Length: 398
Image (cartoon, rainbow, N blue to C red; front, side, top):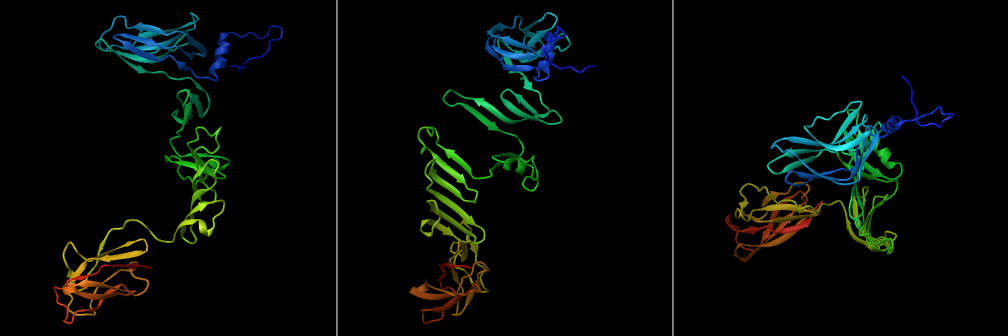
């Protein structure tokens, strides 16, 4: 066994290097495979085309500088062929050949790497790309076919960064696809977040985190920003927790959204460099605006809904309680018809009036304990059990 190193200057002819030495040198850095091109494409009937391209085989470069148009000479329906790059160290040459089957030679003298398989059909060929791209050798990181991959201890490779060429006008696209938790950020934040078990307890979870020691900015419509600084829009996730939206690249006047946890206050204001009271557009306290469903009002004994389609019900929307419907079964004033639960009661006693049967009116009161009481009616005679009593009102709640 010997420790080898390449390459050193010769002193009095004591260093002589051969092609094997260069191949060993290359193999320590680059794994065998396609560098670019060499795609196999179906043309017609039993014919196909092998594109120009480059490969590394057994540490040696292979260059195909002209397209190869060929075909299956004696096609048999169902036969499976392989197109391979073949390196022959004895003959000191390389070739691109089509062989029957998918068994590839790999010994000290000859190595074949596949480019494609070809399945023979009736006057047609089915071609499957089998190119395995050469990659830069590293313990965990692999650069292969314009893709940066992470390789685990079991040999599985996961794409971390990949590039896709577009046209001259669109340039090159880049994808960050680490598979597990991906943290993209400036400064030390990205590394520190990924290595903080409190923030990222499970790195296998497929989620994306954007981080920065300062602001995070998103810019859109920036096609001509090099010549026009006001092009497009800028969105800023500010380090103080604000979200600034709507400003151009050069205009700092934006719409800003701010939430203050201590006061449970959500503010939307026009940002002009400072947040002053006259720039506030909307200010919301500890209330919710979701569209909550109607809740049937539990009625007291002897009281019932006027009809199934006009039942007593209530709902809270934001800081307002809405009550509607109609009841019957009331035969005396001072009658409690039902009680609203906690969270749906008025801040102070709430009175309201509604028309009733026979062109009369009824005055109601809803107390802070939630009781809904018929306080009085305009009719002289006592109410009848079949009389109609609407309960339509709304009021602020606690």
